[in-house]
Image (cartoon, rainbow, N blue to C red; front, side, top):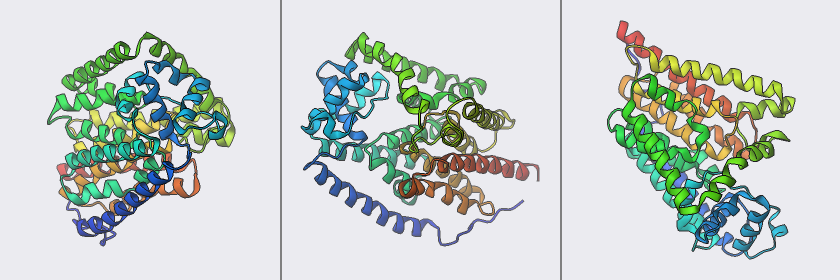
Length: 393
C-alpha cells in the first residue's frame, strides 16, 4: 500500500508554513510588546497576575498565602498597587507547591515585564521541544504560530511550558529515557494530565523512564516542602477539593475545556455530566492502551499523539490555555506523514485540530477542544492502522 507524499491542501508545505507562520509569530510578538507597555501603565488583571503575586508571597516566605483566596486577593492587588475590589476579586493559584520554583524569578519584576519574560522563556522552551520532535524550522514556526500560542500568552499562562514537557517526554522516550523521565516528572506541575502516562510506562516495561519520573516528582515535592514549608503543602491539599467545587461545582466556565464541562453546561453539574465524561475517558483510555500494547508496536508518533490527546480527555479539569499541546500531538503525526506519506485528508484534519483554539479566542465555545482531541485520537488510530496495513502488504 503506497501513500501520497504531498497531501491536501497542497499549498500547506514547508516553505508556505515557514513564511506564513513567521508572519503570524511576528504579529504575536507585536501584540505581546504592546500588551507589556499597556500592562505597565495600568491594572489589567489576568492569570499572570496570580503568577507574579505567587512569586512574591513565596519569596517573602508566605507561600501558603497563595492558597487562601481572600489573602491572595490582597497580594494580587498589591502587585498592581490597587485595592482588591479594583481587580474584580482574586485569580486562583491552582498549582502544586513545586511550581513556585518556576515563577520565583518573576518576583522582583513589575507585572508587565514579568509577563514578557514568562512568555519569551516558555516560548523558547516550546520551540526547542518542537525541534526535538521535528528538527525543521517550519515545524517550530508552525507550533509557535498556532492559535493556542496566542490564547495562552494572552493570559500569561503555563500552557507553552506544559506542551514542551509533553513534547520532550515522547520525543525522547526511547532515545533518551532519563531525559524523558525528567520531563515527565516535571509535568507533575499539572498532575491532572498524569492519570494515564505512568500506567503506559509500566505496562510497556519502560521502567527507566518511570523511575526517573517518579524520582524527579518526589524530589521536586521534597524540595518545595523544604523551601516553602509544611504549611504550604497543608494549604495546597485541601485546596484541591475547594477549587473543584469552585470551578466545576457551580456554573462551569466556558474557559474549561473538558467533556465534563460541556455536559455540565448542557445538563448541569452532576451525575449525567460525570457519567458522560467517564464514558468518553474510558473509551479514550482503551484506545490508547490498545495502541501502546499491540505487538509489534506501531509508529511511535501515533502512540505519542494518542497519549497526549487522551491525557486531555481523561481529566475534567482542563482550561483553554492548556491547548498548545494540541499542536505538539499534531506535529508527531505530521512527522510520521513526512516519513511515510500523507493519508487522504490527514493534513487538512490536523490543520483543523490545530486551528480549533481560534474558536475559543473568538467565541468561547466550550465544546471545541474536546472535539479536537477526539479528532487527534482518531487520526492517531488511523495512522497506526495504515502502518499495519503496509506491514502486512
